[in-house]
Structures are given as C-alpha cells and as structure tokens.
Image 1 (cartoon, rainbow, N blue to C red):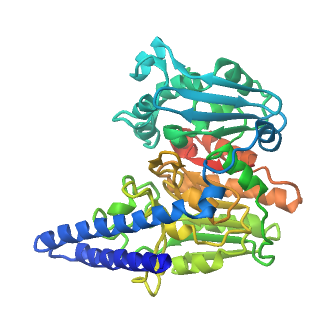
Image 2 (image 1 turned 60 degrees about the vertical axis):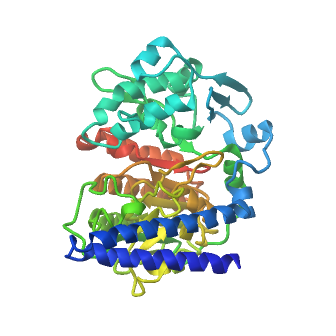
Image 3 (image 1 turned 45 degrees about the vertical axis):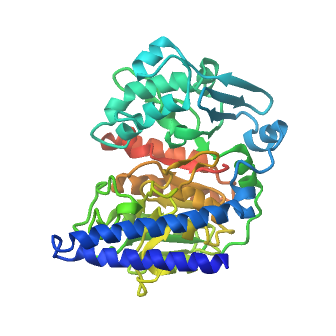
Length: 484
C-alpha cells in the first residue's frame, strides 16, 4: 500500500511538472500567466504531499535509521579512535547547539572536548556576539546577506571571504590543534561537521593572510569528511560486492539538455534549484562541454592502466541508462548539472541528465532525484565522483544533518563520494577530477591501497598552482565524504 501510494504521488508530480514545462516553453506567456500560477501552486502541493509521504517512510525504514542516521547505536570512543582515526591522524567532531558549540578532538590515543568561545575581537570582525559560539551566530557568518559561503562560491567576491576564513581558522580550531595541523605531523584530518559547518571546505581556511594567503590546503594534511562517527564506521565496515571485472568504471558526461543554449565553459547555473528548474529556465540548461573532455580523460587514465571503462555521453547519458548500468561498478563518475531543492528537504534535488525516449515517465525524465538515487544499486561501488554543482549542498535537517545528493549515493551503497559545495567552474572541475582519477588509477595499477584523500589533495594543489585557478573558488568546492 505504501509503495502504491508513493507511485501515485510520484506520477502526480511528474504529470504536473510536464504540464508546467510545456506551458513555460510556450510563446503565449502573457495569456498563460494565470494558468502558470495555478500549475506552479499545484506542483508545489503535489511535491509537498510526496515529501511528507517519503519523510514518513524514511523514519520507518531501517536502512536510513541504521546506516545514515545519528540515532543508531553509538560506538565507543575507543572504537572510533582505533578504527576511524588511526595512527598520526586527527578527527574534529563538531556539535552545534542553540546555546553553544562543542568540539571533540580525537587522536588514536587522546581525546578532549572544547567549548568554542568567541572573543571580543573575533566578534567584532565577524559581526556576531561574544561568548559561546551558537548555531544562530554560525548561520549568520555562513549564510547571511554577507555570508562567507556566498562569497566563496563566486569568483567575483571570493577575495572578500579571506578575512572571514582567517577568523574561522582561529575560531573553529583551537591553538594547539592549529599548530599540530601545520607542523607536518598529522597524516590525515577527518572533519565531522554539524549545522552550517557541513557546507564549509576546511581546506579553504586561511592559515596566514599576508600578500598571498596560505590556506590549510597549502599547509595542512589531506582532509576528508563524514556525517557522523557512526556513519563513518558503518561505511568503513560495509561489505562490498564484487565489481564488474570487464568495465569496473562507469563515466557519464555532457548530457543533451532539451533546447539548451550555447555551450558554457563557465558556471552559468548559479541560483538554479530543482524547485524552479522549469519556471526560471524555461526548461533549459546550458551544455557543459568540458564534461565530455573530463569523461574522456577519466577513460584515458583508467584505460591506459588496463581498466575497462563504460561511457555514457550525450544522447546515451540518460537517467534510465545510469540506473541500469551503475550496478556492479567499482567507480562511478557523473559530470553534469546538479540541482538543489530547498523547499522539500532536497527530495527533489537532482542530477540533470539526458531525457530519455520515455521522458514523460519519472524514471527517465532526465532528473535523477535524491529519492531515485536512494534506489540505485551501488553495493560494489568504492567511490562515486559527482562532478556536478551543489552535490554536497542542501537544506539542514535538524537531527539528521544536511541531506545532500552525495549522501543519497552513500545510502545507495557507495562507500565514499567526492562532491561539490557550490556551483563549479566547468574547466577547473574537469582538471581536478582527471588529476584525482589519475592518482586512483596509479594506485590500482600497482595493487596498492588507494589513498583517496591524498589523491584529491594532490589534484587540488595542482589546480591551485595554475595562475587562473589559484582562488579557492576553483579548487575548494570538491570534498571527499566517507572513510579514506
């Protein structure tokens, strides 16, 4: 009965979205204004009904409770230190509350809990009240009108973020840990953020300002992230299935978007979200031509080392093909537009692919939504690479963290995900991902354990060394979520 109800609600949303898409693409906009308003309201109501139904199902589903919920059994501290942190590494686990923010600092043998305090100088610089660091204060610093995340995500304003990133380096990480992280003695940094912190790439924190800022990327260890210690342990311990021996890599790129405009080598979809994907764009998305090159580079770096790669490019990059061909892959790479939805817990956030022959059917409409991502079979997948905008970005769900597209792939079975915190530059993203894939392929060829955090760190550093991409806007967006 629950599945039948879900199918009915999904079909209702799809039918209304189809009607809205046809209307928006029509030329009689003035005559259709009233009908458009009515349809937009009906779409919103239908989406809310499906979201409410799905939220209830998620609460009753053991997959979500046990795999990716902070509510499952809490591991012992010694287990976290031994199995998750390991030798010569550091974990920073944040707990952001209404009245205070706590930080647990862990090594393999030591642990301490710190209350993060805002001194008067920092308060004046950030425009917040002195005292314990609160959820409200962090939200203001990160997401306000002059929030640091908005500045980081724009090549025009990223330089304005540097003073705030320098203040956050001192505010979020105690002095002893700052010294340790820049000493060269820490092998890997594991960050488990909370609240607004989930959207901050710590590698972009400014360690020294000067004429040319020094970032944590430059001075610190490779970094990877996790929703919680429980989730990270579950992902680390998850038993994987055997992967496709003939073609363990699936690469998807350069989808064909209906009536798309001129190809774009820059980020032209800033502000796009799934809730306005038809209304604000008239059903159009710009092509991303560098994603075809990126897929070709991924094919080359794995192919030259004897790994079979299946590619879905252009007309073949359909939702239906991704759904059927992703099972059994060791590595999954998707280079396309990513759309976030802030209205319904990101349930309608999606990866934009090529609409299939049955585009009127939700399973092949070209939008692989978060709800549909959950249903993929990625039990063989060691890593999903989401070279798409906003795939590690989404609305905060109190008690559940931030439900992002990247987290959907973890639910589907992928052990780890590389995803983005903001709209990415097409060409810079292709360079990061191809360099990253090369590091993975080299380790696989030598039959060595893959150090995913180190490979991504090296890719970011290479891109940062290119003069035109030295700004963190170009390299900081990609983060590794999951165990190393």
